[in-house]
Image 1 (cartoon, rainbow over the protein chains, first blue to last red):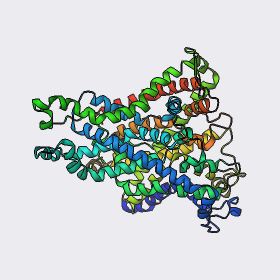
Image 2 (tube, chains in turn blue, orange; image 1 turned 60 degrees about the vertical axis):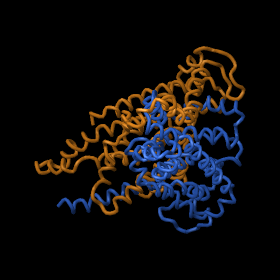
Image 3 (spheres, chains in turn brown, green; image 1 turned 30 degrees about the vertical axis):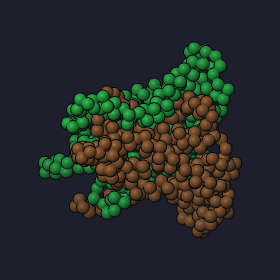
Image 4 (tube, each protein chain N blue to C red; image 1 turned 180 degrees about the vertical axis):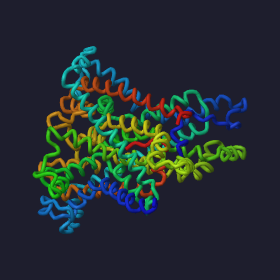
Length: 273
Length: 314
């Protein structure tokens, strides 16, 4: 009885649940393939397929520039976060030292933190450094707020690598740094790549920081660029939606690569949306 | 996927004998070594979290302009100015936003997780799909919703009229409904996160418990009340607090959907900070709101950590 009951009720319910969650995407997708004369006439199923919108939008707004900017901010921030968090998370995984518990606590607390709360001092600081409306300023703040997440993730990966590995290397005469580079990093590489992808995605999704710290449109990342198009007085919705789907492509593709880890990592506690 | 792998705050006691018993020659270097590795991170986090927090308190005591800079010391005047009807309304709206959205997202997430945990075809694929709203950036989600609930062209109005629920399209972003729409958007955004955390929790409940219960003649709803809910109790609490904090500090979702409007119908604390700082250039007042927001979030965070630290109490 239970098996049949399950197939008849549970499966459609599960489909309905996923359908509800994906419905806003569906409604946006229909708009993105509608010719502009049909956008004003909503219908549940697309009446015409016009993929031309996905080409037109590149000339309507400098989407190529926005995309490159967004990817550039994300890439540079990821590199900085990696440079800072690899040694830090290694130290947290391998050493005992004074203040370690406090440091881990701080790393966790910053996960809950919103930059919106401290945006005034950050803004004044960026003005003070003469970094307002520069790539460097945005990258600096984005990488700094992503660092705690990087440390948290990578520490978990270093914990999985047995310390005997570099101990053996050090017995054989390597310095610790040589041993880590030659022996530990290759073993931890898959984890580091996964962390890098998570950090990249998070940096790419930043909206508030570029909105506040940049003023010239040619430096906008994709998200802010799409936002300005959607905020026009009478936005061309079919183009807005085409831009939306182009913009979310990188995070979705990267998520599919790391889904197994990210879904497990959520259970393990720390991820910021 | 194991409940025991929940965030470990208690720092594991490493037992790397080689490293903890340095030879006398290297004892100095050994004490300093970890700090060398950790220093860049401390500097970066210090510059962007600690100094700004101290600065936030300081600026909140001054009459300060966002661009022109700090002018004069005014003591607690900014805080005194906050205690007016307007700010209390902002605080109240923030509470409404969080309390309106999070419990529903958690309940929805719980039922979603139970549903997706059944033996259904394509289970893993459905998990992936259910998780997608969480992957989409907040600002983009809000743009998608602006289109979905558009008063003239939106698919939602269209469907509500087709099914006869509505006679005329309604403006979901009107003064009366804007907060409601924001809450629904937050529920949509938060539910996938709840689903995934609860799925992780459900996976960790031993199947034997359910088998034993059904041998003893328990009905499915009894298993739910007496096995599922108690096993997930802690994960439900921590997820709720986490989502509550994130809801409390939400900027992107609300800003892109309604910009805090119409008038100030959806102006929550982060929106108020942004408007004070970058529309009215009143950095002092914005910082005072920031301090209050900081205190509330820190209080909630500490509760959260106390809760996940209590390992022995699942």
